Structures are given as C-alpha cells and as structure tokens.
Figure 1 (cartoon, rainbow, N blue to C red):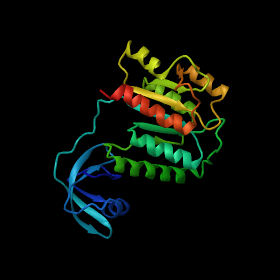
Figure 2: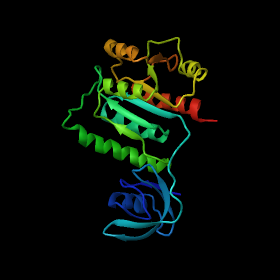
Figure 3: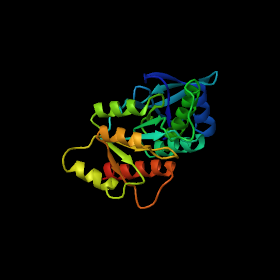
Length: 247
C-alpha cells in the first residue's frame, strides 16, 4: 500500500495537497480506487479512500482505524555537521530510508560550507521535501523530525535533558567501538534514545571534542578505515538500527 504524508492532523475526511496528489497519482501511478496509507503531522496514520480530485487536490475518506504511531523501537538520532548541498541531501535521503527518528543539521568549525541564516529557511524547505519523498518511497510510518536552525550547544543541551545516550564518531578513536559502547550501556540500563554525532568534511575541532567530553558523550570508532562524512552518517545509522532495533 502506498504511503503519503500531509501537513495536517488526520480526520475522517482530509484534503491531500496538490503536490502530494500529483506525486501519488502521476509519479506513483496510484489508482483512485486503491486505498492509500496517510500519515499526518500529529504523528498518526490511517487508511484512506480517494474520493475525487478538485483543482489538483484529492479529497479522501478514512476507511480504517487511525493508528497513534507509537513505536517500541529505540530512537536513533543523527547530528550531522553541515556538508556540501549534494552530500547533505544524500545523507538526509538515505538515513530517512534507514528509519532514523530525528536529524539535526548543525554548523561546525570545520564545515566546508556555512549556510547563511537568512537563506537557511529555503534550504530547510528543500531538505524537508527530500525527506518527505524518501519517507513516502520507503513506506515508513512517520516523517523524521528535522532541525537545522540550532547550534551544537543547543543540541547537546536538548539531548542531555532527554537522557539520550550520546556517541561521537571520531577517526582518531581506535579502541572503543560503537558495538562496545552500546554493550556497556545495555548491561546497565535500557536504551531508549541514541544520538550519533558526525562531523563535517573537515572533521571535528578540538573545541567541539571538548564540548562532547563536558556533555558526557562517548567517542567511538566506526571501524579501521577513515570514512567520508556522508558515509559515516549513513553507515552509523545502519549499524545502530541493526544493533538496537533488529530482533
């Protein structure tokens, strides 16, 4: 069953916006008579029957129960230092497919590109569209949460308040593996939310490493080779999903 998302809470009757209607009927070639799974901005999902298309927008009626979207999976969070546009877009697309729960894109000292704050909202709109399309393509139940107008200090404070396990992938760490770090915590307590920090193309600065240490984050290695930033992001999310959410 095809999955789409709308920027509105679900109800018995809903209106699907023009761009999503076009994507569903033209790109996906979805037939009007076939039900479609819809996710709302309230985090819920339900099965709907398309009724008609008016001025490019589809009207749809709920034909099943609305699911509250609650999941027992461990929440995987990616914090990615800003990358060049094509690389960051690829990371957002692929980690969305890997069912990442949340993504922060943040400025760091050694970023090759620094996005201007007045231009960032336009970038965010494009990035959110990429994640929405990836979510619909792979059939995930909810859109990932996404924030890009925050600092590294903001992220650390927010995630500390949530009691998240903080992990930092660093090319100069050679002893503590991602697997070992998870095993240490699992032996002590139940993991509910894990945050993996990935630096930009230029790597992490000493100041940022000091910030991580102060916040109680653990520095880990992803393996014996030095990975590009975008490779590290996607592979680390995949590793975490396999270790924590695959029975």
